[in-house]
Length: 490
Image (cartoon, rainbow, N blue to C red; front, side, top):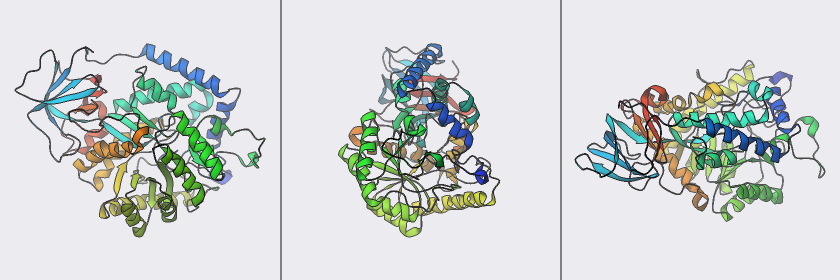
């Protein structure tokens, strides 16, 4: 799971949650959660529960404030808009939406027959935002609730969090770990509200790797061993050797993965996969890349260190997730290889996790210092940067999604942050090529693009903090041509 997925088997010295900004997923409580996923439930029974949960949620959902006529185009007029690429607002034009797409940009003086007109009152319009590193099923569930609730509750919370994600202005997410296929399908079918999801499916991990959630007592594994709890839940897939890596990658592709996530290094505060450990041999990593490439898509890798990044690049990995400990030479190699750098705001600040052990706090600070260096080096060598949050098991933390990303204004101008969160992250999502589940234009306000649109009170090009307060600043939220929120004056 993004950030730092550590094995769920901490000893007495590490009775801390350790993920989100610096790992939160390896406590005894989490192990009990995963055990509940396994107790008395086959994968088929879980899916039946999820389907029933989605159906219940769909029946109880409320419609948007704007009484939208599906048979008529919508004209968003009296706006100044950021198109996702340019450095200033476009004035004197409205946005005409027909179906799920932007049909055209219309001069203010022009009239459009039969269009339903929405007067935006001179406010700012922009594309819906994209989170490049998200966990749609696992972000918004607390460990205590998940530990005590019925299994379908976990998926109901995921569906509820999907709607909240959309209400924060994120119309697309790149899901880099977790069983989000059913959630994606329910959203795409219009059964529940939520962002577009680019799913990776289960994270592919070696034995003892960052996605190995087993207890010490589960070892050794034999040919007669059952799959681990996390594997049965679709969270991770343990694979050793080229043949097994090929098998597990191909399984995720069969399920509908738009890209593949592998674990190439350790995480913070982990006693079993230290952050400097290299994971997956070159032969194994190349096997994953080969399988994904044959399917027309790419591999992204969890790693923090220069050695891990360099091995991944040598094997053809296209996207580095995290990488905060990269040195200058490694960053230059990333640029030369044309790889993407998907980075998160791990800053050891007021939104970060708290740790009691000195070594944990030191490691957290090391990652925070590395984040600042990484962004600066990425800019220096013109690396293709993508921004994401990597929130996990944190109902309160998900509410800071926009706030976290606004922190990148420490290194970028506000307009550059917005470019990265719209057309920039869209370009990374599109790297999935023929496996792209949404092949239209994302993250742009132009003819032919998906009608994923926000209308804000204020100008985010001047005040990036507007994206941190969606309940106040976002007056209209549209995804796929459908208005999900409208608090504009009548």
